[in-house]
Every structure is written in C-alpha cells, then in structure tokens.
Length: 165
Image 1 (tube, helix red, strand yellow):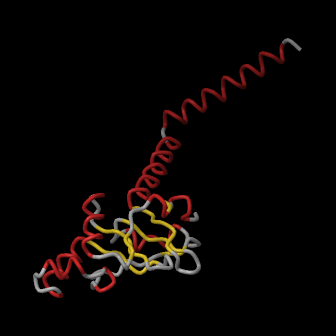
Image 2 (cartoon, one colour; image 1 turned 180 degrees about the horizontal axis):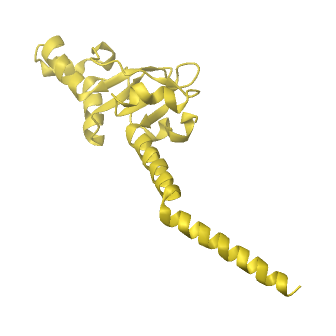
Image 3 (cartoon, one colour; image 1 turned 90 degrees about the horizontal axis):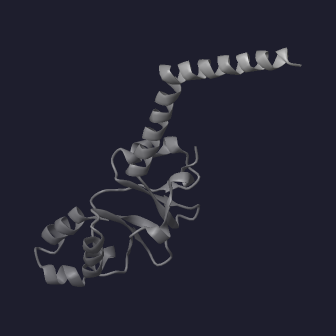
C-alpha cells in the first residue's frame, strides 16, 4: 500500500526553518508541545529533525551553558543527535517499518528531497488496529452464523417464490 494515504501534509505540520534562531525554534516547539519537529532549508528540502534533547545537549556541549549565545544562534549551527531518515512519497508501507519503530513520525519527501509532510506512528497504529478489528469481525463465529442464516433465509425465500410462479 502506498504511504500517501497516511500523509499529514506540510501545511498541517509544525516545522522549523534552518535559518530560524534557536529562540524562535524553542518558542515554536514549546507553543505546540512537540518533542521533535522537522527542519527544512530555504528551498524546502528536509535537512533533519530537531528534538528537545538536541537543544539541551547543544546548550551543555556546544554553548557551555550560555543560554544567551545559544538563543541568538541559528538552528543550522546546532548538532542534531539523531538521524531521522526521510522516506520518499513513492515508498510503500513496508519501507516505513524500520523508521516508525524508532521515531514518533517519519518525514516524507518528494523526488527532489523537498519536505511534503509526515507520517505518524499513531496513524500507522490506528490503521493496524482497524485491519485487526476487521479481521476479527470477519472471522467471528457470530458473523459466520449470521451469514449462514442469511444464506439459508435467502434460499428459503427463493424456494418459496418459486412455488408461486
């Protein structure tokens, strides 16, 4: 199955521009309450994902606890600790497996590596539960019994109508 069915488009996703200051990025993450968000460059290319932990590690290791220097720096100067790989919009659902296990979301790009949205772990789990529930309903003895009863009723009705022809 193509992953575009699960795509949350860029227009509905919180993301940060690489050129934003750290202060702007922190405000955005705090405002929306996310633990991690995609980062894009001026051309809209996906360049990585920044997390709350990245801000903390950079404050300690790169900015030596000088919050004022860090706040004025740009996101592109920060080291990102995790490599959130993007997938192509042409990927199928099986190609998400290794990403979705370790990430809350998977960034999705087009053929030019332009960021077009994300697929969340939540959407994949909802789909799996829906499939599981539909299989349970289809395999349910009650459903099979009702199907048999309906088939028998249909045959009886057909036989009954044949009597009056």
